[in-house]
Length: 246
Image (cartoon, rainbow, N blue to C red; front, side, top):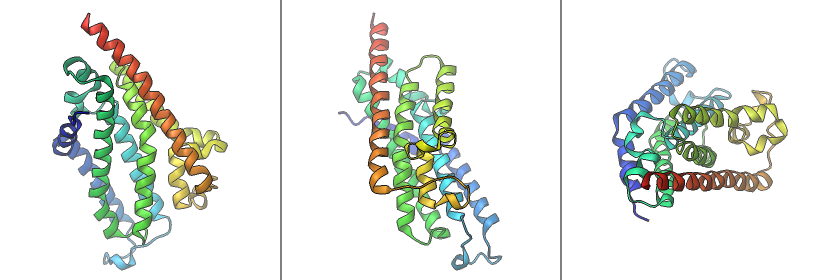
């Protein structure tokens, strides 16, 4: 596989539109930390209030999973040069190379966000343990995989309005469905974060979670969604490239 997606990743971390999105989120986190800080002198050692980890975990989850879905579906303004349909139309890369490259580029960008967020999380010490931060990152990374796959599928839709609508529907479904059908809770990304922070004490939702039993099922379920999305996207792009070559 040609490593063209590394160029796309470099573009992401250097592009001003991406940087504006990152700085906006960092500003919100900083503002949230200052508002919730229990010590007037901003003493780091006194930085602890109940359920603060829940607030920041949900913030990270909503921001990173939404951004990964937005990027992979090609709906971010900065994605003009690397939209899936543009690559199929103007590049000589294979369809599989394009889809996997788009996936790897987005995944690298998520890892990049984790790295630049880590010092902030560490300084405010809202968990008291770096292990919990790493577990949170791992869960968000796993949670992003099906959304990236679905985003890649939506990126094959020629109609921008339909692409945008599908992106929003799939993103919201992964958040809303667990509350409508509680018995399916461990299949959906948001509940992995709720399980990590023990949110049943705050949000009064059932997050009875057995990691050894449920985590393998979750990973397989997410990979299945990703693979199905990629296979359908591949067929759509092959048809699209064939039509353009006629």
